[in-house]
Each structure stands twice: as C-alpha cells, then as structure tokens.
Length: 123
Ligand SMILES: Cc1cc2nc3c(=O)[nH]c(=O)nc-3n(C[C@H](O)[C@H](O)[C@H](O)COP(=O)(O)O)c2cc1C
Image (cartoon, rainbow, N blue to C red; front, side):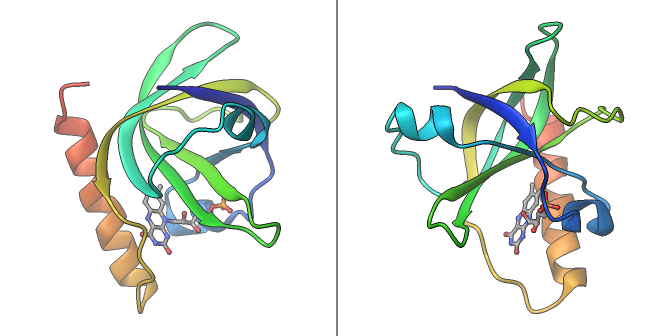
C-alpha cells in the first residue's frame, strides 16, 4: 500500500515540537479511495527525485477544516528542506491511534516512543 503527493505547507507546529513533518497533498490518496485506518504508522518515505527511502513516522489524520485527512511524515535522518518535492508514503505497520494529549510534554513523550519503535522495527 502506498500513496504519493507533493510536500505542502503545514502549520509549522511539528518543527516547534522538535519533530518537523512533511505534509503532502491529498489528491492521490483520495483518488485511490484508500481505506486506511487513521493513526500513526511505522513506514517508509521515498523521495521521487532520487529514489531514496527513509524510515518514517507516518501520521494519517485527523481531518482538517475541509474534512480531509491530514497526511504527514516525520522522516528519520532527513534534515533538508523538501518543500515542493514529491514523496511516496508507505505506511507499513500500524502503531497506535491519534490521541489528544493534555500537554505538549505528553505529546512529545508519545512521539519519542513512536520514533523509538520505528527505529528498531525491521522495515
Ligand atoms: C510520529 C508522530 C505522531 C504524532 N502523534 C500525535 C498524536 O497522537 N496527537 C497529536 O495531537 N499530535 C500528534 N503528532 C503531532 C501532530 O501531527 C502535529 O500537529 C503535527 O506534526 C504538526 O504538523 P505541521 O507542523 O506539519 O502542521 C504526531 C506527530 C508525529 C511525527
């Protein structure tokens, strides 16, 4: 299972948390009528420009103001600005549901734990 899209502007909140994410447009995802459960996945992200694949924390959802699921990924080991590039997302293993945390500290702790799982997963 995969879908692709162009990197679009997010809110910048991921960066503030210390986990910058690449948000992609939803055209391909909805055209394929993918029925993916909302939540956090361990997976791979491929840069179309050079075919390089990276382990990533892929977040599917929640829905934005338009009622469309957000598609974003925290890409491990990627420091460059990839705004405007085309990426392929491969969500491979479901980790957990998206959750509304009471504090930013709890959210960061949860993301750190996700990243730990992704790093040690045999993708
Ligand atoms: C692996 C991972 C898991 C996340 N899980 C949650 C979550 O469960 N609840 C939450 O409110 N935000 C979670 N976030 C953060 C939100 O998705 C955050 O709002 C987002 O990264 C901001 O993106 P933007 O700056 O591209 O708009 C997670 C982020 C990552 C990278």
